[in-house]
Image 1: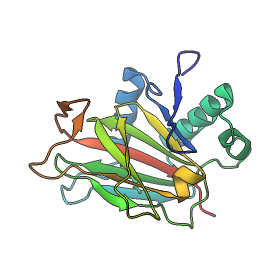
Image 2: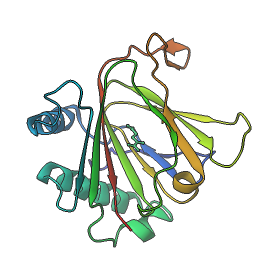
Image 3: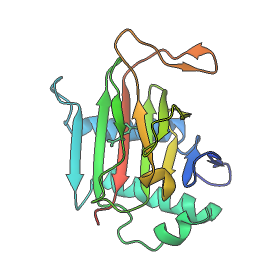
Image 4: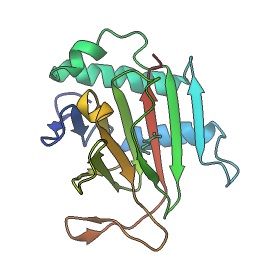
Length: 193
Ligand code: AKG
């Protein structure tokens, strides 16, 4: 983190921010070890862990880092709401996706406040955003590379669904190239209302 952190505003979707280089390679591997050390995923059938309230120290450090980066770039709207919130996040979901696994289109439950962060580790994937209230075939695809962070707020959080379509034997394509699907781990940080 620091001066080299680059934030991109996703122009089509108000309140969607992407930071591709949020975590260094070294930090990604430390974080991955910390997550695997929790022992949540020793059984193959378990692919999601949820924590409320006091989060593990690696998650608190991650959320401090998110606060710092938001602060350092002064992201409009987001910073006003997020910077002063205490704690910034009190709910954590870690999802582990095997190749061929994804997540259906959804808007996060309203019991979570605005301002949701997702950090990606391991395999890159395409996350598709589509308007929650329209039937039209409108969508925006975002590449979530390892070490990236997205922040969703306002319209992006409440009015757009997000999904990851990694079907078995299917493929995901980014800029004309098929993505080689491997295991992916994501960390979603939210705050209960
Ligand atoms: C959720 O758990 O609600 C998600 O949307 C996770 C998204 C991701 O894995 O990147």
